Image (cartoon, rainbow, N blue to C red):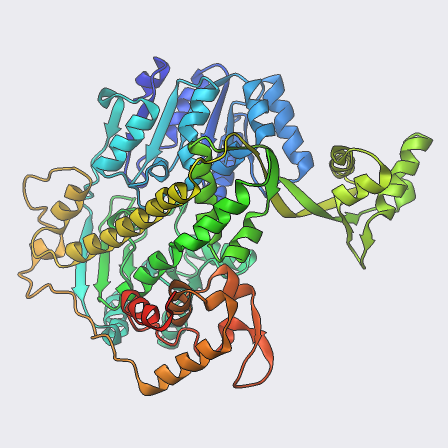
Length: 629
């Protein structure tokens, strides 16, 4: 595969978690003349790899949202003078026209795309910005492309090869079979899970263990329960503060906290070789996710156990997440009408559109990506509407050394801001109008002051700028085709859940089933999974029957409808609300609640999550009978 790259051919590498994917581009990066651009969605992983490369004397850097403008400019300088060998960026960075212009002036010898399965609509973790990578490579004339992933099924691999023109001969795939991992599936009801968990941990309470749950509340609740039972457990999820998550991770790495109860936010980039147990307390979203997560166990080659506590009740939560992402055709039409009738150049807030039309931000991003790929619009440079500025020295000291005219300009600039106790808020567009100068000059002046250590900048209110390339001839037809993409995505994600159930109900070799999912043939049973080691009884995954609607629930829903809340006007919106799924509109809406008479967020209403124990499809059918268009 490295030979393919050195011969200037694109290549695909599918290696299991911990299989050494990063070496596949780091070694060619050192050998090739020019810059290796690494696209990765994992900021924490970028930082770790950049730090490790620098320790080895390799010129590496990253560009991400955590850098100041001064730090970003320093990276651009190294790109221009050719001293940078590896640059790590998030895929969203490639939508920035200024960054693309910088790259056009840089000799890019290799484009490495980590988590390449995100490019495929058939993949389990589709990201819209990845769809544009193939066009990006062609625009810049980058022929040497390395796509890397740990979780690609045959259809996904074929999709990646098609996008980048990779031949079958340049596709390298290592075996996913890990002989030191004992795979187990334990069918059990929700009420029995905690007791099963206690039995598993009791054998070796100090063994490094990750327990995965779907919800943040599950991670918190399990950690509290295990602590009360005498086990050294800590929770980890995206809702914790950064410093809390970092402390938790460090405690796990050092052995101080051997048991982590976590959402899937934990594990990316964790380089701990002696993890002895991975326990899935809830069903995973897909077999691809499951394979990636259990791949973190036993990297030292010693025996490790990977157990799935399988209960059908988990499908409710997972299905709800999937249904919650699908917008209504009406919402899609409104966004398209607003966007494609704004003139040849325009800018929008994705966050604002999400709230106005009650579509999740990721779905808004996907919609704009499709419009770009279909040639309706092209992205230019995103910008911030306001800057929070903290002056670190007296303003007179800051302006010393500048000529009189420039010194006065800086004083006038800060006078246009709204001063607070610590931070001054500056709107570059408004300041430019008052000072009768281009907006770009305001931004450049602030960036210059930051680079010299005179101020701290916090940009806020990002807006995305676009150029319209053509108008649609048939807006209803375009709406229908884009809506169909979202519906197809929903069906694919639901199918992945059924693949998880099929694995959990497998009564023969679990490894053979899992490997077959990735197109790998295991001629004989593995002999070391739970199914091979034991003659198991019925493997049917149990679950509790869906409850019926109670008269009290019907009455609560009727009251909710009579209140006529705007964000609940369609059957799908009402269904999401009753199933406990937040949306941009419901999260930002305040209302007078009938039980208290006080104004509060709509999501604190008694009806929110009222039917969270009911299947989404059933609730949707009920809501469609209540709301007649």
